[in-house]
Length: 139
Image 1 (spheres, rainbow, N blue to C red):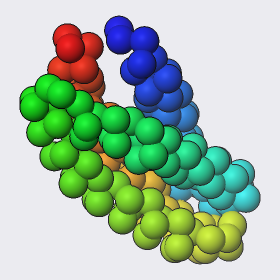
Image 2 (cartoon, rainbow, N blue to C red; image 1 turned 180 degrees about the vertical axis):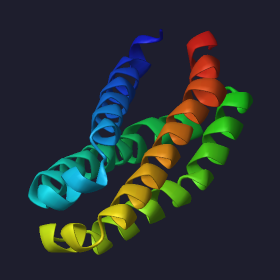
Image 3 (cartoon, helix red, strand yellow; image 1 turned 60 degrees about the vertical axis):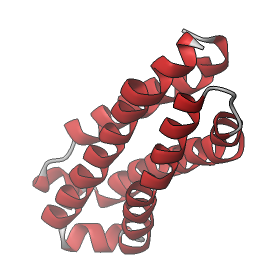
Image 4 (cartoon, one colour; image 1 turned 30 degrees about the vertical axis):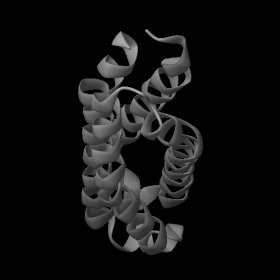
């Protein structure tokens, strides 16, 4: 692993851990009974993802877009352009699930939108690991 990517690999592992833990607890009866806990957990997850994306947007992608290797530039440009879906889902999730009451009133919808968001997050991490990180590690 390239040392410059180490923080991103570690963040990915942490985000995937948080996603697994969140998803494992998504049961309608539990969500309905403890919406405050689910609100706190989902807010923590969203904040962690946003912090990671901010780090990528301000440090990683600008550096890769300026790389000498044209393949790295191309992969970074493509992944940067594809970031919109994850950002949109994060925004929608954050704006919709703003209180324990909204979660309590619609636990099934909360579960489904949580799963959709987590799937988008996993896909994003998988794309970076498959398309971008190997290029950087070989450079």
